Length: 156
Image (tube, rainbow, N blue to C red; front, top):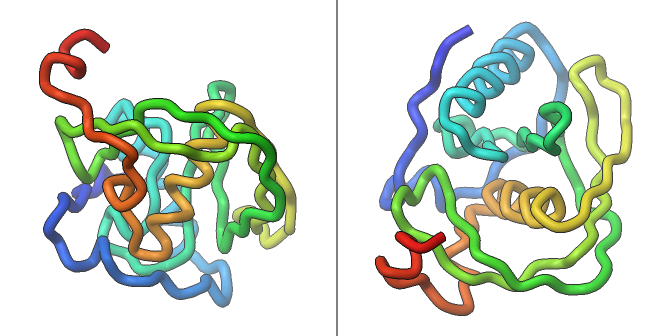
């Protein structure tokens, strides 16, 4: 496994739409493994393939118990609303307040090609939305209600 370079704000790849994964092959599996290692090393809770320069519909979300591998994820249900601070590995040092659903259910394919659903509330729901946004070329700063000041960031 390898630690991949996380692209930073300003890289045009982050603004492009990702293509679906048509078939799961060794290259896909290697990408999943490398992304998992990169996420673990970064200290983040989610990572999308475009953030490592791969325009494929793959995201990882750490739900606190395990890292979910979501290939071709789709949000199939949302409920409620939450407003909280959000950051991004591709936009280090910047945080903002965003509004996201309080509950999210996603449907995706796993590394064995099996369709499954996962659900989450709070941070996990926020992460599902944040990471699937990356697949559309959307950054959290596009949805921010208000950016936090340096003083607010220091007091987080």
